[in-house]
Image (cartoon, rainbow, N blue to C red; front, side, top):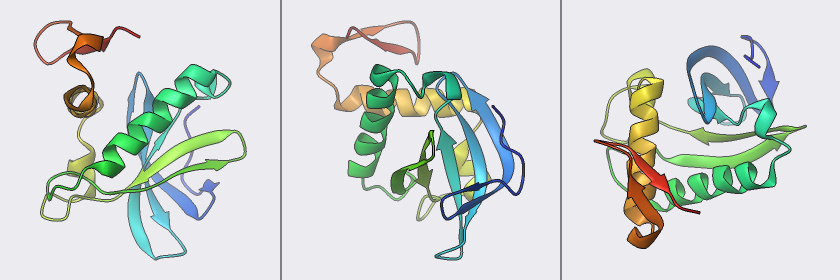
Length: 137
């Protein structure tokens, strides 16, 4: 379900699609309430009714929100607009602009997987090759 420019999700208006990966679609959007540009990672429609996928997506948002580093994008929120679930993120404080901070879908997935894996219990993880980690649960 690709969202088109002009679509609204709560206070956010979609500007453009940045990339599509296995766990979500990333969009450039504008926050009308705070007048700032953000990146929205949207949980695919096929996963919205899967409680495990929704819980995993929420844990991802919580882990990223707990991080405080100048090169990691700040998480503004984990939100719902109707059946759509998404997280809103800004650009890294001292890092590149919004489009560069969202990476390509492949690099984004690797980066987020690394961050989540680095905070998980090592006994619950296994390597799936260079830069690839899988959870055992």
